[in-house]
Length: 532
Image 1 (cartoon, one colour):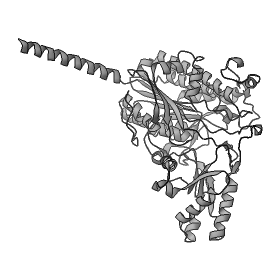
Image 2 (cartoon, one colour; image 1 turned 30 degrees about the horizontal axis):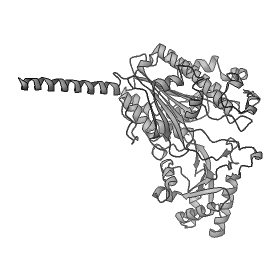
Image 3 (cartoon, one colour; image 1 turned 45 degrees about the vertical axis):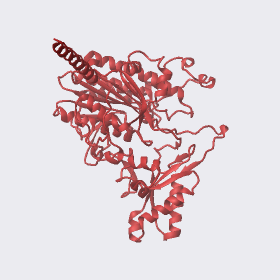
Image 4 (cartoon, helix red, strand yellow; image 1 turned 90 degrees about the vertical axis):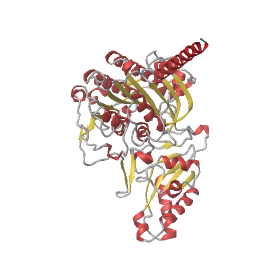
């Protein structure tokens, strides 16, 4: 009798344990795959601003993400990266050394000029003379893997004000990637992609930005006194930005402003409604890009009011976007991930009255002085080819012709640069590749692409301005030490809300999203996915 009772007890224990395991697994993974995937990249997103303004947000935007989603407070990109490189890391799960995208503009040794990383003369632009394609992207992306998983039946569309970002998000296999042209303001794409949605044809024909931009003004969304943590002098001068026809940079200025986020949201909601994304029985993907980065076209160095206003307006755009998704697809059938990229470097230094140590590092002057130094050692010649993104490019052809040691000239050049005013460090590419440097050089090795890398990498002192007189479209930048981190939010059916405060490698985002979608990770993703 006792043996029978023990047997029954054991069966009950096993049943309870099995039930607990089943409930645990059910809580970890959604019951079915989402019908719609929405990937959102926000340039310059900062957790501090979101926490500061959460009392001013509505319930359906950032507050919904914080309440119902997974919050990764500090996603680490390794070293400061521009928007293109950071987006590529998010979508490939790989660093620039692997995915081939170290920055938007790279130095071309053959022409001795900078060129666009996605430049592809084999393509033609639609509504633009730009000729871009994702060919330089050397790894698959989340978008690619989703298309492969659905055998091409799932749609992938990308919308961004920036061309490079839109193409990277669409990947190699996407249906289309659209961006706003800097010259005409039209929504543009490349013939690399074969899908040209009627939404975009119609918008360019009947609602072109060129006909509307004069009527758009960016002003505070609420009373200036209602913005939190503002000093008195900022309350006295509300901002107002217009995009006049007389300004040759008006489309460039508009593209990084808060009103551009609303334009992008308009297009995104039209895609969901007219193309029926997530409503066709297949898993579709819509990639969207926004910005809340400091507005570089302001007349003052302090643009915190514009930045807070960008967050408030973006929250409204997210609420509007989520409402359309919920109405047409259902948020319970949608996976949304919102990934921030580190804020871009400021272009204005603090006023001289504050007496903050300051200097100006001229890339043209640095290259000229280095060339004179190398001529004094090795004879006349153009030993320095160019300077791009804090990288010095030596003339390899001349070095070969003179039968000189390339590694020796690199070492000489780095030693000379360290003695130049404003330079805090200088590494040769040999030191970076071999790993003979310090922790900083190790991070650099991850975030460079050998095919486009320079010979010497230079760091400039904090507070110093870096001027590039060779390119009129490149603004001066003011160096500032900062961790290259940003938050990421994931809202997915069946995934419990939680907050993770430790540093998370940005390369884990792609495999984590792929796991939740039950598709393969991008082919260059080496990091294990997060499990929650």
